[in-house]
Image 1 (cartoon, helix red, strand yellow):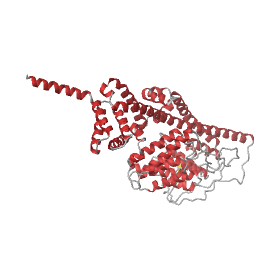
Image 2 (cartoon, helix red, strand yellow; image 1 turned 135 degrees about the horizontal axis):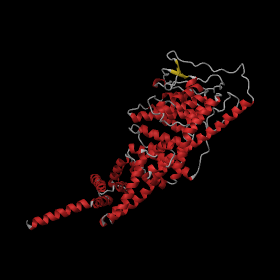
Image 3 (cartoon, helix red, strand yellow; image 1 turned 90 degrees about the horizontal axis):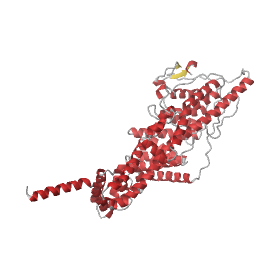
Image 4 (cartoon, rainbow, N blue to C red; image 1 turned 90 degrees about the vertical axis):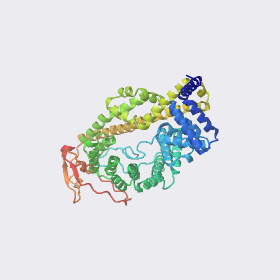
Length: 554
């Protein structure tokens, strides 16, 4: 072989080995070119693509996301190119979305601005969750406490809940700042933009969480008026109708609330929520048979996987007010047997994850072991709460960032001493700590919120159980003879195109939502007068069939 050919082959082999072994050095050169700030738009875009591609090849994809964040915090074409690439990555959520929250809002494209605004809203609710019943007033509302009463007398007032004094803790102030930022970022989406409806939804939710119900209702009305195009838009409209119904209920306008609940589509996932919440409205108006009929639908075999623990307490309360004490006690016993183990499992899971880092460590490496230490009835619900897509992605990225930081000692000295490593790796460490804290807080918040709801419902159930026991004791000690002039329940009214059909334990899909539970005249609770305000929205069509449970079907 000729000497010149030998030299050429050797040089080519050395270049190939060097090129395959040092993609991170190519990334360092691209980062330095971007940091110099002397590139036009095309050159900046090319260098950004080179930066993320070489870091991906080097096994440093999360470092690449942080590098984009560092570059995006500056000014110039390089910053704008880096911001565009990070926004593309942020569409997947996780670390990129978390870092996009630090970008100047003016740089955010409309679709990402909505996601960032929603992330600020979610962070506010993690910091300071809404009090139970603040968005939807249930049995625990102020002024609705159970009181000893004669048979048939109302034990639940119909007044709306009085607003609680605002909290002014440091955490609450942080949460309010997050809510305000969410509203500001959502508000920058221009009218006519495809993301406008979603932006108004986020703004409405932030206003509602901040206690500004007037602004929230205005935005929800706007969302509900938009003609939905696509599955996401349809879901957004159904959510807006549900929120408007809740606001009407909270201010005592049960007629409007029931009309809005009825507008939620039967085929929508929100239909069962609307059916359950409208049961409280029917109960407040004295329409107990309809309230119990809705709960009969809710507890149908079709919906066994849905989560409505409060429905059992409401069922017991309605039965109690109608002097069906054994039936009410059975409803409470069913609730206790089903949800006490879940409450205890949630409490135990929180004890096993006392801090955010402990939660991340448990979920990242010992998730199955954690579930194995919980009561069997609690495992499916805890697993559901801790396996959301966003939470799973964040857990993977926290672990990936730790691996990338650990790999730095194995990188070449040229890369370790580069401007990229000096400027970005400290930010990777900081971002990992922040993302870890945020991920752990989110996981613990999901468990704590559900546990708090169940704890309140269990307390309500216990209080109602005492009321039942007291009433039964009164009746046993001094039974009162039935009055000849006692109030009687009016017969069930049906339309000409409807027919009463006795319930024999069989459920038919076309009858769901139209059941009425026959209570009889054991004692009749006086109906609460309807509010003065009347809804002007046309009611939904009546159900095709009406079902009334027989005594054997209760």
